Length: 504
Image 1: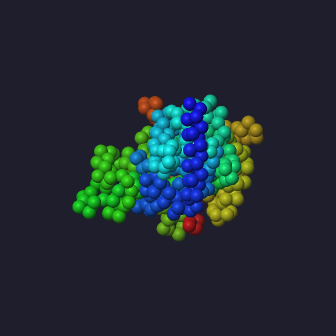
Image 2: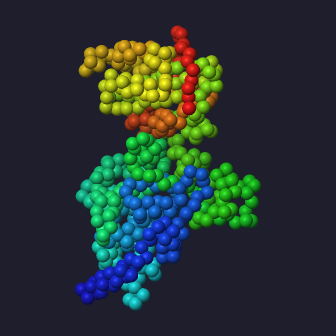
Image 3: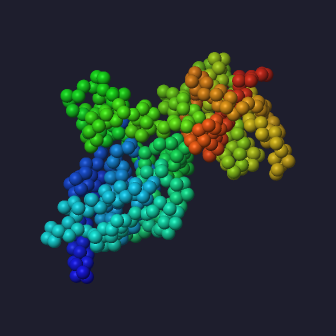
């Protein structure tokens, strides 16, 4: 037995030494190694504007390392690609430690099964002995290579994750993660020297996006926000990995035409176009757009399912009102540990409301918020507080602050704002917002990233289908500020101040 183990280890080390000269040094070499050595043609181009070639993810994780987010369609190859990335790490970064964590043990096992199957490729076996690069046979949850690299499947529990110190943690289907497990996972990676190479520690998140309020939504928003975290986002959809459409299939009347536009005639992916056609016929628009085209999360349980976040097509536009003279108003939601939100808006005689900008910050007193808001007003050349017709705010702002002994509304008035606090039922205010969305009398500038994200993420609790009260888990603050603005506009009275709109 000992003789066999020693022979396996010796053969593994010989094979690994023989492979070292094949270590890819640039993207072209990386693609060639994976294609010729593993038999996988990783996409180097995409069909959809704004998508990312899957090879870009492999290049990031292999050459640079660190955090990354992969948002891809169901069946889009992300789990297999995670296994390939793991194999490349193990082969060419001696001693590296990689752990695989899934939204469920079954999901973890899928990536691990792909990984163990890759070790059977002929390139990884000694031609003389037939032995591979593993120091010993793979177990149900662990592989160890001859030079000490190791990959292991973790159980989806805080206890399992907290006891881990590794260079790379690959998380598959993070949309299904327990939030506490995900938080624990953020502290397990550590950069290290692996076989003469500096390997940057990183957490990789691979998933489809099912829910606007889910983890993937937060990760992609964090990446888009100034100063955000989460690493680069690599995104591709079903059409980007489609196989070439046969010339005999007509484009006219095809169920994929809206997404394909004939581009699949020059595709080079691996998913048969006939399969995608069948899946499109079997699924609703919401499911297809969310899980296959990666356009937006599903809208089940959404408070504002009629909100369209596509710039230039829905409610997002950088173009303000056509009139030279407009009226400025605002909406505000108070917070301390939770965010304080102020929205600036302009209105015209036609009644259209255009949200021009936003201020969102947490952890400050209202006085400090007002100082920051004044700086933003000056930078963007917005009107002074006394020139804004009014701010619609939470009626709870009439309560005295425990620290200052004064009300938040009094502080706003001291700063020069006219304040309105019209009361309405929550459900009535939501209906006012929905009605404006339906009638396209509410538009939002794309710089209002937090408001746009909040309108998509604002949800009812799926566990309480009889309740008409949305969840208070973050998106509610920006949505409340918008609601206060529109409720007070519906009940408008008094003079309105006009001022030129500078926009842009």
